[in-house]
Image 1 (cartoon, rainbow, N blue to C red):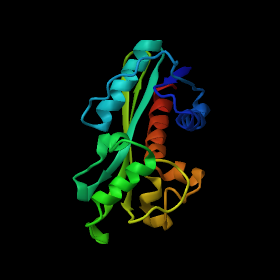
Image 2: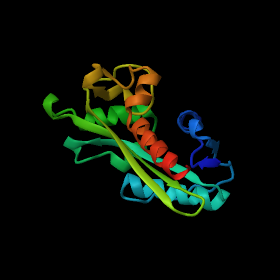
Image 3: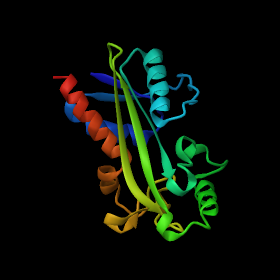
Image 4: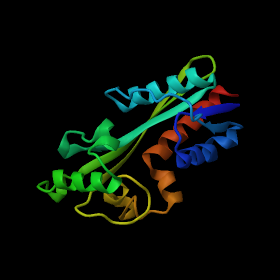
Length: 193
């Protein structure tokens, strides 16, 4: 069975293909001519659903979409659904902006989590919605060059390093997206029997 990923991100496509390939699912990229839906939801779940429904409507294929971001407790959950748009510029600009907004926050109050919501629209229009989270802390400076986004600031105590310092394989196993994808794979395996 073919599913379309509501994204042009090759890393996401590779990750999804690796996890769902064992179920006999081929994951294909969203066509270049697909319109970009307005991600105007107030939750990760709403935005994932918006993208999945748009990809399904455009291609006629079952669709999978995710919406992910960082929630920092001391900032009232910000940047949240605005993680990729927290400030104009690059990932580094957003990291520096986050550090500036947290410069007066004590070390013991820097709890955060990465969140990933996935919506899968099946051929019959039914939906599977799952959520994965990974708890951590925001450091006061960047560590590591791996990953992307806020990874060099997101410290995972159990591994004593940031996402930016973890191997890709380990990150995929413990990350918010990896956890959500495993839940999706389990739900799909039950539906596709």
